[in-house]
Amino acid sequence: MSDNNTSTLKSYVDSATGTVQNVVGNLIGSTGDQAEGQAKQRKADAEYDASHATAKLPGMTASTSGVAKDHPDRTAGSWNQTAGSAKEFVGGVIGSENLKQQGRQQNLVCTVFSHQLGVRV
Image (tube, rainbow, N blue to C red):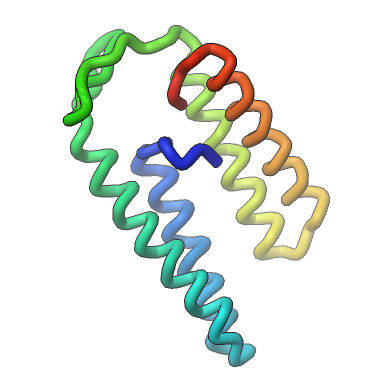
């Protein structure tokens, strides 16, 4: 996933992932998993805050770092990246390595595409 993505939905997915990892770590007694889960939850909180510090206007985005014109494929890319994250999360929860891999691949394609275009999704 792109570290620059500040969508509210992504923050919810990351928060849920962190919560599950924290609970599983607690159940199996893994302090490493607990710490990683808590770190993901803190990151999700920051993503949530950042997603609300941005004003989305038709065709452009304004934030504390300035105003940027949106690429026409930005919305589709953001949606695809969020769907990839969801696949990866669900695959991890249910133990499906195939679904996790599909999610990783979908995220990779979105990240490469956005970097090629110089667009943040």
